[in-house]
Image (cartoon, rainbow, N blue to C red; front, side, top):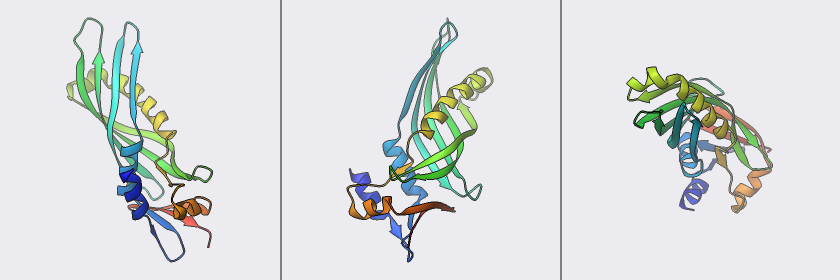
Length: 180
């Protein structure tokens, strides 16, 4: 509730009625709303539990129309006849923002894994290819969850929901462009 209130107050409009959402606001939103925790198994080969703990969003920093999303997580990997191994993962994704007017939500399309780092590093050589496969599940799940949603209970945002015509990225800012 508090995050929604803070985000609602933080939206800024320019002279044309366009609304800017900062990468900090998107980061706050996804960390408060987007959750990912999954168990994976290939019987006789491995069991894995992966949990995304937080994300960081950057806008138009590495490419003009692109968002970069960094996910930080933890995992437990169990192999037959071996003790479970705990580790951390940092995964870097790219995506293209899209506004869905019916939902008043911004989604990240073409959500794509760029690279990842496992810690401890010794796990990367042995389990890296397997973790790449597991990260595809995270990639697909995150693409289906909104990165930001306007609050339909807020009169200004309810109006905005039906008047956004496009999304524009500038370094550090996602602009919801409106009809004049």
